Structure formats: structure tokens, C-alpha cells
Length: 382
Ligand code: KG4
Ligand code: ZN
Image 1 (cartoon, rainbow, N blue to C red):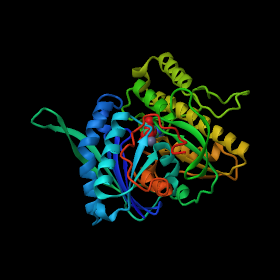
Image 2: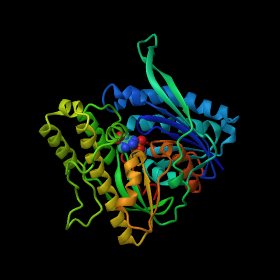
Image 3: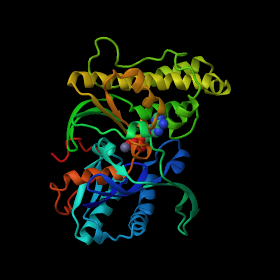
Image 4: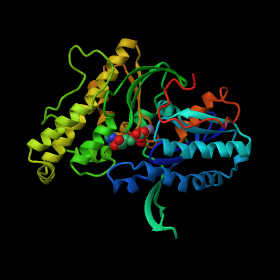
């Protein structure tokens, strides 16, 4: 069964073709990061406009490249939520139109459930295509046009962690710009929510530190790069919600952000930190270590309580090299940990098309009443 997936929940426009829930034929991602970088964060209105400009040409391009037309796909899957409502609407309404016109089933998918499914996708060769969109040129009515900048094929595979098979039930650690949660995953479509952030998400914390230090957007990769060669033990930053008496699975990163802010101030401010070749790496490494330790130790606790030995770390922050290597330091022996390759950690339509295969019986038709939902619960569609 060949499913065309569409993802537009935030600032990545993505289109993918996945066969039988696993085999990746294509995963095209148009990243808007350069456009939003000017503003230091995602501007929802610009994100929606860019999705409108890019989505249909990308669907066309993806199918044509594979020598296919809409007639050849068996269903169309789309992210229904959660996410930015204007951005989600572009994907959902486009998917509705295509499914209705082509007489295909329309399968709505939960974005976070998609991330949790990402370890099950298997590609052959170079199946990821990243288009970095740049703003440039104007239309006659003054609107900015987005033009593709660099187009990158392929993706660095993390062989050590990617070739491991995951057994159900497993604990899923979802860490992205919008989510930080621990979930017990019984099957691709059945979840038990264990805990989540009570304030900032892990990626958001990285983004805020980067903003404070003026390192650029998105912050996670910038902070990771700046942390290289730094001494992670130099500054003792708090490990929120890990202390004695805190037995739950919730996270909190806003206190850590405030502690980092105070540290930078005490060190003479952002300019002084950036001017010192050792201070910047040490601050960033100390911050990164605090986030990594909290995330992995909480995941370890959840696995111990549930008697589970399999962990999947998914979402944009799962790209982080220290989070990957931290598994050795913060998880007990005997745990199998899977990190998807980086192109499948950040937002992509392959995870949506892959998971949709498991919802095919629940959505045999094309429901034109479906509505994008900014706050869709993980229990959807139960
Ligand atoms: O999953 P994702 O692409 O979008 C959301 O659903 O939010 O995650 C984006 C987040 C951003 O906050 C970004 O800073 C973070 O993932 N991120 C990283 C790294 N790469 C991306 N955080 C830490 N280290 C990285 N290498
Ligand atoms: Zn995401």
C-alpha cells in the first residue's frame, strides 16, 4: 500500500511516499529556517504563506520524480495536529482536495504519534531531499517569493543506533521545539502518556539560550556546535525535577533557562561570554549536559518503573550528539536505545505516511468534515 504523506504543522513543508508503513520511496523537506531566522523564531503567518507557495509544487515534483501520478497512490495522509493552526490548515485542506479529486482515502495523523513512529522507517540509498528555502524576489503585488536555495540529497546515517529493531512496548522520549514528553508506546496507535514538560520544551530551551547568546536560529544545532570542546562540568546548572522526592515523569526547563540567564549575566553578559574563547563552549556544554542528564535520567526512571528495556528518542533534539552519546553515561546497562537518522528526527512527512498505514482501517474514505486541530490529543482517533 503506497501512501502519500503531507506535513505542514510548523516551519517545514514536507511530502513523502512510503510503502506498507516502512519503505521510504521519498521524503522531501522544504525548510523555512532561513526565512524565520531573520526574526529569531517562527512567524506563523509567514510559515502558512510559505506552505501555500511550496506544497502543491512539491507534491507534483515528488510524484513526477518517482514516475507516479495521484492515481498510483492508495491513500493520502496528513498531519491533523497539533501545531500552528494556519500552517496545519494548508496541509489538511490540500490533502482533502487531492483525496476528494482522486477518490482516495484521507488518513489524518497525530504529529507526535508520527515522531514516535519514525524509528520504523527504512530507506534504501538517498531517499531524503532537503530544500533550504531562501526569501528572494517579489511578485508584482509585492509579496515575497520563496526560492529554493541549496538542495541536499541524503542524510548521515547513524549506523550504530539506527540498525537496531525496537520491540513493543517501548518508552518514547519525544524532544522537539514544541514537545518534551515521555510516552509508553504499546503499538503504533496505542499510547500511555507518562509525563511532559510543565513549561518550556527541551528544544525551546536550546533555542532560548541561543537567542540570549545571539547564536542564531534554530538554537539547538548552534548551541551544540558552540559546546564543542567545552567543559560540561565547569558550571553547575540545576537539574530540574530530578531531585529527591520528585518521582514523576514531568520535565521543567524554564528554571534551567533562568539559571543560564543569570550565569551569563554574572559572567559579564552575552558579549563577554562570546568574546572569551573558553567561556562560550563551557557555558553551552554545561547547559547541554544539564538538559541531556535530565532527559535521559527521567527516561531511565520510566523504563525501570514499567520494566521496559527499549527506548526510542525522537523529535528535533534527538539530532543532538551529546544526547546520543549520553546514553552510555545516564542509562543503565541492558537498554536498547534507538535514535532515528537526523532527517527523520526533525519534522518530516515520512513519519506521517508511515504511521497512516496503521490507521488505514479507521479511515477508509475521504471525510471532508475533518478539521485541523492545534491541540489534538495523543489519544486521537480513539
Ligand atoms: O521536531 P522539530 O523539527 O520541530 C518540532 O516539532 O518542534 O524540532 C525542532 C527543535 C528546535 O527547537 C531545534 O533547536 C531542536 O529541535 N534541535 C536541536 C538540535 N537540532 C534541532 N536541539 C539540540 N541539538 C540539536 N542538534
Ligand atoms: Zn515535530
